[in-house]
Each structure stands twice: as C-alpha cells, then as structure tokens.
Image (cartoon, rainbow, N blue to C red):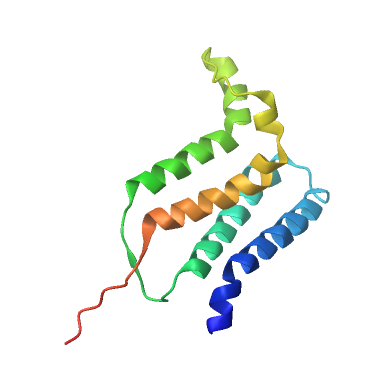
Length: 134
C-alpha cells in the first residue's frame, strides 16, 4: 500500500491521458449536439469524481458543503457552455464576451468537465478524518 501512495499522482496523470484518448476517439463516432452538450460533460464529471475519490486517504466520507469549490465548479460549467450561452443570447440581446480560442480549445472540451466533476465532488464530499472513539 505504501508503493501505491507514492505512485498515486503519476497514476492520475496516466488515467487522465487514457480518458482523453478514449473520449477523443468516441467523439468521432457521434458528432451530435446531444453528445457534446450532455454525454461528454456527464462522462467528464463522473471521471472527475473518480479522480477525487482516488485522492482520498480514507474511504469514510461525509456530506459537507464547501461553497468556494462549488463556485469554482459553476464558473467552469459556464465556461464550458459559453458557446451555447452566446447562441441563446442572440435572442435575448445579451452577449457574454468569451475569446473564441477559449471556446474551441480541446482543453475546454475534454478537461473542463473533469475539473467540474472534481470540484463538485470536492465541494460536496468531505473526508472524515477525525472519528470519536467510544
């Protein structure tokens, strides 16, 4: 178990590269809006939650709200969906200015949902370190 703790950061990087390769190949199968708007963010968020749980030292978890991590997750969700928000904003006469390279970047498409899942689980799940022994 001691060797696993040493290799854990490198294991996360390897798993992240495998995720990008698998999801990147899956993108060529289905180019629909449903895949980009719903399926890819859900897969990424689940993967981010898995990465957070892999980083926990103990398997005993509790539910605790940490609002600063939830705000970071909300900002990342808005960045991911900014291309669709600007399309809908045409009808509302309101526009959110986001650089075009930021919207079309592969980092935003693949890594942003993983970060959303990571920060969302970090904002909702707390590691229970201190136990009361009776």
